[in-house]
Amino acid sequence: MNISTQTGTQDSTQPTTTAVVTGATSGIGREVARQLADLGWRVIAIGRDQEALDELAASSERITPRRADLVTDDLDGLVPEQVDALVHAAGISPSTSVEDTSEEDWERVLALNVTAGAALARRALPALRSARGTIVFVNSGAGTAARPRNTPYAASKHALRALANGLRVEEEENGVRVSTVYPGPTDTPMFGGDVDRAALIRPESVAKAVVMAITASDDVQLTDIHVRPRRELSW
Image (tube, rainbow, N blue to C red; front, side, top):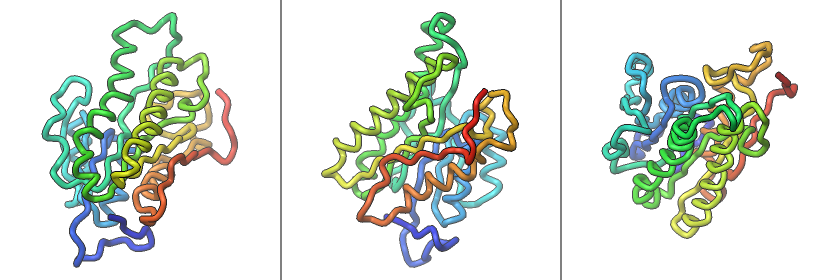
């Protein structure tokens, strides 16, 4: 079920559409939650920071906060019976080399960046099939090109890319769309590069690309969306 991005409110005669958004306490995830709520969606906003979740929920009556650690908590109950879109924006980015990354750090980055997204998708699939809905994985430029300073992060994002591509084929006959958004350097707490932050992509700009994938017309799916700064950055 899709809503045109040309209007700011949902048609009151239509059932409320529901999105589940992880990583909703900051950055891209928070902006996705806000933009979907502005379009009239009910948003289940998942994050670890209760104060940030409360602030987000206070900004719109359409946003329902759910505090959870996607690595350590039980994920049952986070996905409602009706789901029209799932956005996995949660992630961590250890800036370490393979030599300096412990087994525990490898496990956590893969668990949050990849496994949690797969686990939530599995739980949401029955509802998404019924709604002919959309899954969006927020990836990274590191998901297509690894750099020495963030190999564990890049490895997890390469795995997330494979998850999206495989799931898309698996769900093709079931009507579920699967999109990947690859942001370049974005002004979020995760990005710690030594650059002029005014040159970074704004989180709301990446969120617009996510919303575009969700609200695309029913005859298409936007499989890979690369969001790059106007001038490529080096740090």
